[in-house]
Image 1 (tube, helix red, strand yellow):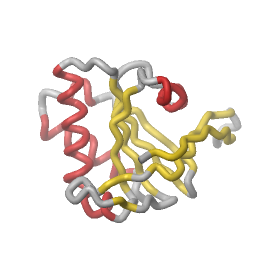
Image 2 (tube, rainbow, N blue to C red):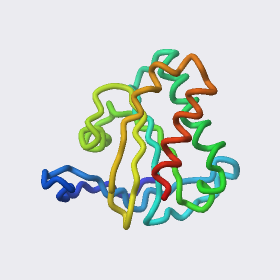
Image 3 (cartoon, rainbow, N blue to C red):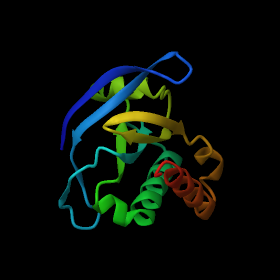
Length: 150
């Protein structure tokens, strides 16, 4: 259940104004039990942005992304320090989120949240070249999620 997504603006390290998102009270569920999980104020979010109509490759990337996160970080998902989201960026309610992360097409974004504010994020653009090699795709996604966990 999503209760609110609010945009806030913070100064980046180099002084440029960067639009950051505060994702608050975005309830999540444990992938195995579907029981609600309390999200932590410090966490990592992997967000697969997709179109409403998806081709087989985009469906595959979404599935691989979800598996990489839910299977690789099951404990962290259960305690709310890692979460995964599939987001249809063509839906009106998701336009601000897609714009904040500069999403123009299907993309996997990993964001590091500290004190409920986006500290940094990365577009994992290599998923396009790795989609036909599931093991490498999974390792790439998991490595990037892990990098943001400290």
